[in-house]
Image 1: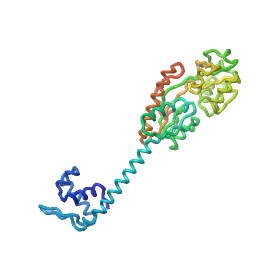
Image 2: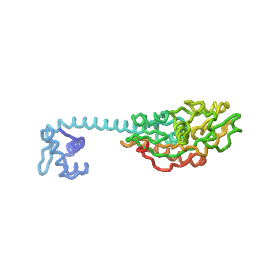
Image 3: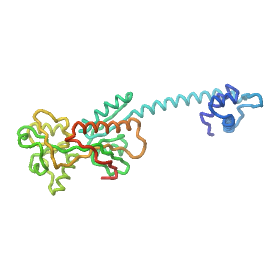
Image 4: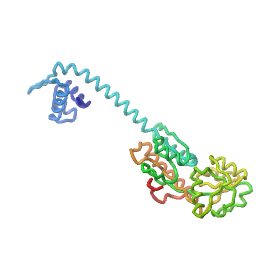
Length: 317
């Protein structure tokens, strides 16, 4: 049996009006279409609902007994659809974003603030994690999108580059007088470099840059947290070598100097999302806002942050 809510609505309107012409007009149908819908409903139910003559339409006794049942079904259907739409609206305002800490600290807060202004009560969850875990969060449907570096090779993921940032040297205490505003990679060989662990993009980019010169990258210390690295720099233990956005909040910090690595690598920063499925309205807006925030970062820091050079695809590794 295949009876649609529309057929039941037609039945109820006709049962009330007992007039095919008025019912067709109210339901925005032609009379032949209305007659066909009633006939199919009667066939599905296995009993006549109306008796027709050239002048009159009369509801049958069986039809009368079905009116209250049809009203209950339509009432429950409408109530269920209201709950469904309310739940869908709630779900459409859920967003989970994965980002490595330096972006979770720089790009993501501004993005969230703008989304809070655009939408009524959005629920945004931020997962801060290393680059590889950010990618995994999207692959395993734990995040709607991720801000990460190095385009993933997974065929189901799409990577859109937003910007690139330079690598810099952060120095403090006695090291400030020894490190000029501009240095080269070779100038840093043998220096007490402090950076992040080898699971970070900071280490991977610098290691690749030195490897291309036939040199092994051997920092003095590797830590998990950027704040710990900066603390050691302030104490004069060594020099931090990190991407600019990683030390963004240290710029202007008392006792700390920033120097550019003029032949250093440029780190790609972009959005990763799944190729399949349609993003929610909130996820779409988040990607749009992230692009706008990135442009503002580039405009405010042209020396250190550069525009994206091309659209990158997840087919690139």
